[in-house]
Amino acid sequence: MQMLVGHIIPFILDYIHHGIIAINQNGVIIICNVAAQKMLGFNQPVLGKPITSLITETKLPNIVNTGQSEYGKRFIFNNKTFVVNRTPIYDRDTVIGAVTVFQEITELEEISTELESFKKINKELEGIIASSYDGILITDGKGKVLKINESLLRITNLTASHFLGKKIDSLYMKGFFTSEPIAQLARESRKIVTGIQKIKTGKVVMVTSSPVLDDNGDVIRVVTNARDMSEIINLQEQLAQSRELSDQLRSEFNKILKEELDAHEMITCNPEMYKILELTRRVAGSEVTVLLQGESGVGKEVFAKLIHVWSKRQGAFIKVNCGAIPGPLLESELFGYSRGAFTGANREGKPGLFELANEGTLFLDEIEDLPMDIQGKFLRVLQDGEFIRLGGTKVVKASVRLIAASNRDLTQMVAERRFREDLYYRLNVVPILIPPLRDRTEDIPLLADYFLSEFNKKYGTNKIITPGLMQKFLDYHWPGNIRELKNALERLVITSSSDIISANAFAATNRGTFTTAVTYADDKPGTEQTEEAIPLLKEALEITEKEILFKALKKYKNSRNIGQALGISHTAVLKKLKKYQL
Image (cartoon, rainbow, N blue to C red):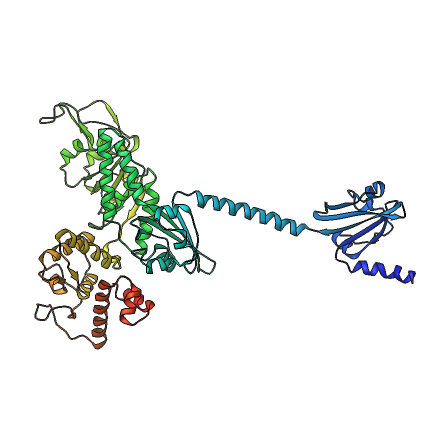
């Protein structure tokens, strides 16, 4: 029976997944199971060999000498890590050998190291989010809020229960936001969206939402950054109070300018304009010269003011129209003049616009009209930051951020030698081309609604425009761009005798020819038309549907309420509003 057990034990050991090695009192291996041979990489028989000849750093002979056990020791062999237990073998009171049982933990140790690394990174990210002065909100791919920081609660005056575990869309449906959340728009468009979010608590917050996409292009997270605009305005006011009189005047100018930009926020839903605005924000923080290009009326001055407001400069924003000032006077206006520089000059001299714009921004509109004889002196100011007043000898230094604008092709003017090539390349560090209104027709309804609201407030009216007139706006090519649209709406608000402004009222102003000849349902019969035609049944149904949606949109607060009133789903309302660009 004992012989049978002696034969079975080695087979039993070979079925154990832990490595087992036993040595006698002379350090010779007497047991080595299959698991041990595989773990240690032994490709030949090891029984009967000294263990030190195979594993130089082994501690097993020490167990024979000391008779003391060791547990949970870490051991490295052939670039593998093991955890080992070592125990002496006794025959009564005499140590006759030692046995070690071990298990490889290389992969486990790597996983543990990687896990610790991830924990460290996660802890750092948690710290960054928590310490951010701006509010941070993170939602999943379906709009559910996963994480917020304390700054967001401070900025919005809401509580954590309003956000965590809730869908961001629900805050809009419950009336906490006055417009659809920027995070929702970013999730749906899969693009970075920036806008102003008004909150029920009275806060006005500038929000930027950035979607995070997986390898398939699906949105898995949306990271939203929120900044309290009222805090920024308060900081500007405090800064203005601490300056001397000249600094106070310039800071007050910036405050007024900031309030103007808040009231006339850049209004767009055009993807190309989003890219341009993002570029403008990045450029604003630097000191590079910017060249704004685009047709007259596209809003180049608004972009110049945005760059100034977003920059770190505390000086004033000063605009100069190079085409509106005669050439002989332009040099004295830009660089100033010293006492007695010319007949009729101020006896004490006069600082130029470059000096007045020190530490601020100088916006040169219609730069193409800058006379050639002034361009050389102008180039020196750009390169060296210094100039000499007209009729003077003293060098004046000025730190001025320059923004130039043109509605002409400057490269063609350079080729025709009507504009200095070196000045052109000095100005053209960062060119920004603003598209005309006809290339972003999706902005026309937004701009029209905004301007109409402003003029209603200005003139104390409550006028609305019909779908027919909006279609006319969309069909028109607007050669004067946003400026022409604004002027047209102001004229219609003043001259229209009815609170409902129809397409006929616009046609009566003789502001261009329109491509469409359909008589819209909202136009009053009997008014003069270029051509009257009976629309197809499909067109008539669409016109009626558009009118109903237009009226519902004016009456109800949001698209869900519209859907309930009209007996259709929320999704259907959104699709129809998008279809008719309402």
